[in-house]
Image (cartoon, rainbow, N blue to C red; front, side, top):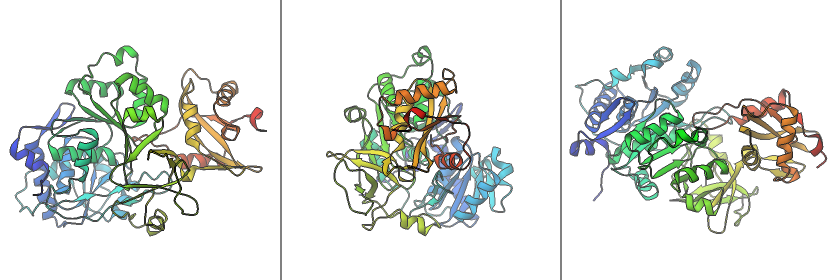
Length: 504
């Protein structure tokens, strides 16, 4: 017998059970079920049919998740649009996705008004609706990649249109790996229009747990939320962990985190010194996974496993893991190549057959473009994105190792490493550093950093140039390194040459 999981089942048994909390706003399961049902009926009455796409353009809030569930229970694709999207960005996403309707927040009204699509505010969409309800069937999401190496591309998989509640693969994995269930309270401090926060929240609401969100990330507010709502689980990106660690020790100790038993992080590489510091503070409750918007595969590692194998992102879960060489052949343990996954549903980038083809091997396996190796025990270690591998004098140099070494040095708030053109070597290593207030942006400071790196990095990996500037990261901790690299290659600004190292 198939067990169905969705908020309506929870509402029928426990209507007053708390579903979502944002600040002073609460949404019970009865409200989540009723509001999403009314919005689903309104979308259907407007002519949307299973398989169509509806865009959701709003900031974090209880109403965001109610609208998302309206799409899910209607057999629609949900296209979350970043809350700060500009007119041109919204136009691109709506046109490329083929969206037929738009639901938006009040803060997005002016930008939303520039589209000719039929649209509703969140309040209008969730208002009572007497229109007939079609049978509830499973929809899905249509998410766009971050676009750090080009324009974002949509990812959507074929819908099963099975009865609502049939999609239990992710909830089963969440129970197995993280212990997420009906009794869980999940802090989700990131924007819900991103893949991981949206999917974790939606799936916890299938099983009756409670989602606690923040309107925007603030380190102290996150600790306060854990204490106030007796949070059991949380979800982070490394930038957030770094900001938590930057709080004064007395402030960090002021909040009761005793209910907190699982902290999940992903989305970007986590510098080892940040992860070690978090484990020292919170204990061995950190869980890391590697996946992506594309959902090609999934790896997972506990704190204990990571401490035994620093830097690993874990072993494959529910999929196959392969490392291929430049010639497409599968490599053995500890050999570095492009990481591929097998055993998951087929990937197709929307309106981008060339990108879809490039992401697949001759075996039919798919990749997100990351480079790494797998050890003899099956643990994956990521080196960097294939697109950012530096080839210097015929030697492959991987920026992540250099970035980890830089990030651990005093005075370095953030950093990015990439290749810049060189007439002799083809490319050489350049580092851009965002300094803290304690590190002056001077040649002497650059020399000190480069001298420190000389003790931990082989000559080919040491930066030949260093520059200081503020680095902008996305809300999920991603850095647009492609744009940064292009700028420094085409119109380099002030930078300090590592003269003492150039002959190395």
